[in-house]
Length: 79
Image: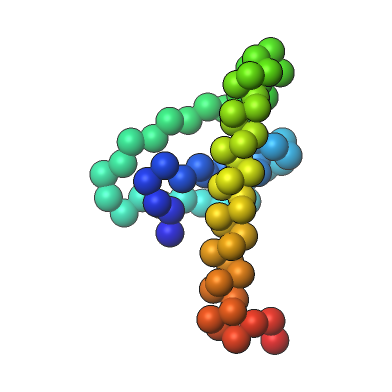
């Protein structure tokens, strides 16, 4: 479940690989979308923006990993 302000697709932007997930919204939402290649080119040319975006990506990835770890712990861990 994503919360307001969550980033989606940050791994695709960082890796350049094909998206590995599908997102379905369950309520009215506002989205901002930028093609990964275009965003990477923009970030290459604007280092101050790159830093801010990379910080946001790192925070989003940390949050997702913490949530996955919490869910695994609740489920009894790896089996």
